[in-house]
Amino acid sequence: MRNKYAVIFVFIVALVIIEKENNIIARVSDKLTTRQNPHTPLKPTVSSMDPLKPTVSSVDPMKPTGSSSSSSPSSSSSSCPPREPSTTVQPPGRREVTLTEAPRRRRDVGKHILLLAATRTGSSFVGEFFNQQAGTMFYLFEPLWHVERRLVSAPGGTNSSVSSRTYREVLQQLFLCDFSLLERFIEPPPARHVTAALFRRESSASLCEEPVCTPAVKDVFERYHCKERPCGPLNFTLASLACRRKAHRAIKTVRVRQLEALRPLVEDPRLDVRVIQLVRDPRAVLASRMVAFSYKYKNWKVNGEVPIDDEEVKRLKGNCESVRLSAEVGLRRPAWLQRRYMLVRYEDIARYPMQKATEMYRFSGIPFTPQAREWIRRNTQASSEAGGVYSTQKNSSKQVEKWRFTIPFNLAQMVQKVCGPAMKLFGYRFVYNEDMLTNKSYSLLDEKTFRFV
Ligand SMILES: *[C@@H]1O[C@H](CO)[C@@H](O)[C@H](O)[C@H]1NC(C)=O
Ligand SMILES: *[C@@H]1O[C@H](CO)[C@@H](O)[C@H](O)[C@H]1NC(C)=O
Ligand SMILES: *[C@@H]1O[C@H](CO)[C@@H](O)[C@H](O)[C@H]1NC(C)=O
Ligand SMILES: *[C@@H]1O[C@H](CO)[C@@H](O)[C@H](O)[C@H]1NC(C)=O
Image (cartoon, rainbow, N blue to C red):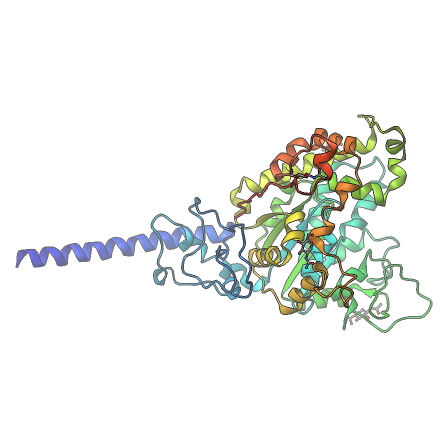
């Protein structure tokens, strides 16, 4: 009899303890939700839509903040995370209980994807992954172009702390569908919020479709006019309305140099920001620049030798260092970036486009539409029937290695010298002679896993 009561007593005590625990958890989670982002736990499991198995786990199993073991693997889990902590089975010591709460707060603001890259890293291509679903996505291609131009021509030249703050503020407003600050940087100034001069308007599907595409106006020259059909000059009032109607926003930029400077943007409770940093082998970047801006590199080719104080060499070094420093901030996973930072190598996207896109979408917490998948499929693979309709499409995994045959070995060596630390961080292998550079059986990529959440 006694034993029976003892058992019941212990049972009640256990219940009380569990209840208390839940209260504590609930309180902690309330605190966390105000600041930290919690996000839908990303699943390391394979999406049912994608037959390819990701090699990169999106979750660090060593971290207590890892994935939920209970949420559905489908993309819908991002918008509707499991709400009741008590109904989910949690491994002891894990924190997802608190993390699953947060999406509630930011759910209805949609997602704000910032694609952060350096020039010639394939960011236009990767930006299309998001642009290709204009139904739910408002995508802007490099709006900071206008800002940089004005800052550079400002009296006294650029001041990096001022420009990074300005970039951040413009991005912040754009994510909120407010174009007023950006308008102040556009030349010539928009008249009644209408401009014919928005940089690369045609690269934003949302700016070239109804209702933002107004009837074309005669005799107005628009340099970046919509390609699919003629549209009138861009009315920012309409653009803003269209932006608000879309579920998500994405911006591609190559102008943000320090991830750290984005912290207030990421912490803005009105936003739900995801930063995707895109990197590429700096030797490939240089090879690509040498084609695109050949005039800058004339002297190099002639002499075969590169002056180490050359402006372009300094630029390259500066770029590599800022990319590396930003990535180090992200990979260190500070609390403000928890689940909001992802590092992607362009080479991996080129080799496994569908898999990488799936990972990026899953990370972003937005559904990967058939429309976007189809675009990626068409633009990354040669058709199996040679000479077929897709024969002009690039086989991206082939393209991505082409630079190995265009860059002279001494330049590859120079890049390794000035970008060594960045290359090591991202897993780009050095070459020590011409043969290593041009022999494709020698891979220049370490199979690297970036544990980004
Ligand atoms: C940039 O501007 C800020 C504020 O105007 C000033 O405090 C800072 O010293 C400037 N930095 C440089 C490098 O000129
Ligand atoms: C821009 O669009 C808004 C909303 O439709 C409209 O009220 C405004 O008149 C337009 N601006 C110009 C200059 O046409
Ligand atoms: C693309 O090129 C790579 C490397 O040559 C090859 O392995 C792959 O099968 C090609 N893919 C397609 C779809 O042609
Ligand atoms: C390329 O490297 C592979 C393996 O290292 C070697 O077997 C092959 O002979 C090399 N090819 C050339 C053209 O040097």
